[in-house]
Image 1 (cartoon, rainbow, N blue to C red):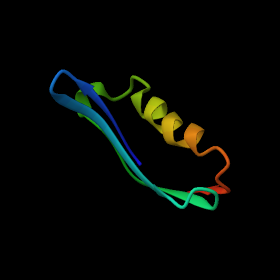
Image 2: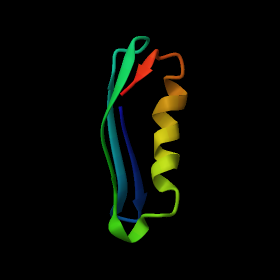
Image 3: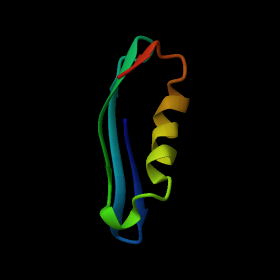
Image 4: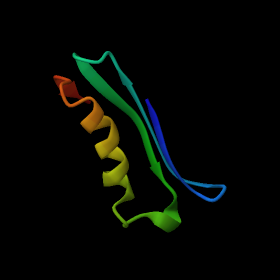
Length: 60
């Protein structure tokens, strides 16, 4: 699963996770552009995969 936030043609945030659905999810990368840190974007982008995979037993 890959999630990203863009502003026009600028990538602001990127997250990547690997999952085997019901057993576990491994969050590989979460990156936020320095100019956009501290605005809650990291929390927002992390809600997407965890909400979609809410039945996963473990999140690493």
